[in-house]
Image 1: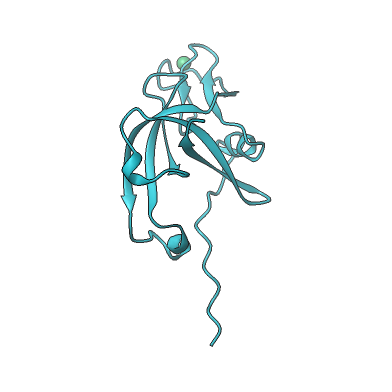
Image 2: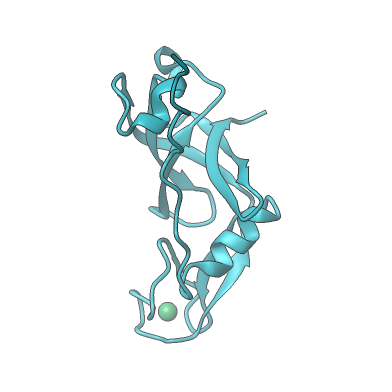
Length: 141
Ligand SMILES: [Zn+2]
């Protein structure tokens, strides 16, 4: 009996607010919102600056460098599309451009037992489809 095709992983659905982030990811760049008035950077995208209330939030490129803030390791797939990717490491990283600018993502190219708080990381980009590139993080090279 033929096996059913492995279900796809759930993919993000960009909305008008987040589309510039995903468009940059498709170019293998990491962009974040930055307030025109005070320079505060936001993730996930916001309609107004949490620091000053300003509505001028454009997107700006970041280095992609980060440090490991926290993580958890999944040994059971969160959905069937992750079955061939176990263990999945879910992380919160702190981007270098701003204290406590935190972003979540998967960690790749590293074993769970090598992880430690503050580990230097860099953004990695996985082209899942022609319209979807995921931002992940791996050890800094
Ligand atoms: Zn602001």
